[in-house]
Image 1 (cartoon, one colour):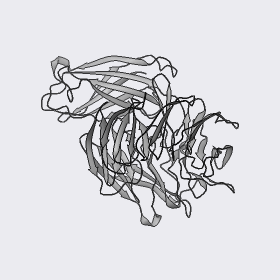
Image 2: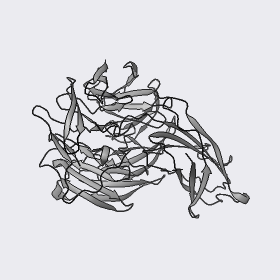
Image 3: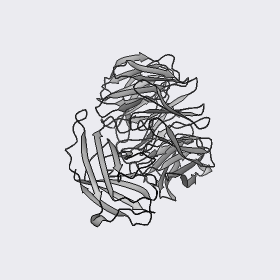
Image 4: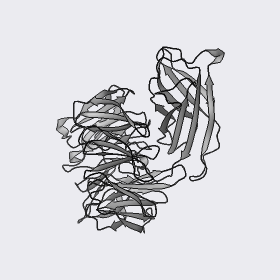
Length: 502
């Protein structure tokens, strides 16, 4: 590690860049002591204020230079003059996330501090490495449901586009619409309709099964990859831990009943700074379970009889939305409620942005909610004039991406408001119905799939977009959301019985 820097951008100032020496010890092995960068003060030379009265702090950009904080958790706190506070709270804290090995800039949009005279800045940086679990470890890429990949995808394909391989399910097997998860070595793991877990090896031009595990579950969903070559798989009301998943001989370590849980989505895992993991599972009947890594139940709660959809924010707080109009934040130690916010009926799965903002949608509206610890603030509501159909994806630049029945949308979070930047209506001739949630490559390229194994790739150019490719791979069937694996491979399956690599 060599240094880090800070951009500050008041309204009437040009963008300036301040570079600070930053030489903490090397990242320790996971689970050992974390490191903290001592506070660095940025004092304007000659007593000239960094900002003067009447100017507003709009955006802060932290840029990490010549360092590798791959898959690391960063907590960054910005301090201003002692007399300056935001909402009467000082210092102003921000939480960031580094998405991959080549990412060296993290943008955090702060809020206007008002007409203040700031002469000193200070930054605290706390960082600890997250465990290496896989390239696409969750159904939605990570515990925050952002669908942001840690590696690049394939923005360019030959014309006409070609598939790298098309793996057709053998007789007696059928694939569902659950996403494929991808391990650190490139192995693919997914759930089958008849209750089997399957691992596929990408051989380049073909794919072959490495192993299958019959679970007997009738509602098996995508597994979640964990440390030490393990995975958590849930189906019906049972969760299991499977080890040695990168070998031909995996085995089940334990199973735990979560009765009366029904129709659970994929498990969510949160790792704290000491390497301790917590596993969370929810259900369509309002139950939520927190488990230890040995399969014991830490606590369980029920929120009425409505479906619950989880995410975990940067501090480990479980946030979830119910179809009965309420967004919740709960304490992970005992399941007690920290706060609730009534928003609208039929809330979507929550997604957590790089600045800790929670995003949901209902009807045509998108909502941005700030978690204040014991309370919440509704930052803004945006009417998109179309009805989003899947969860919100969030890029490493903080931009939101959604799909409707046949459209892709990009939304900018401006702090106090949200702005629709562009809308892409896909050619009706491609039958773009039932689009899947958008997958985001490390370079920001966007991917989605749809009916007839439709595959679409788009580049976001801020207020416009470029369609890199859009074509139908098959003649019918619904597709799963796509995942990104080694060698820029784009994977997706579906009820059409195919696993496709682009």
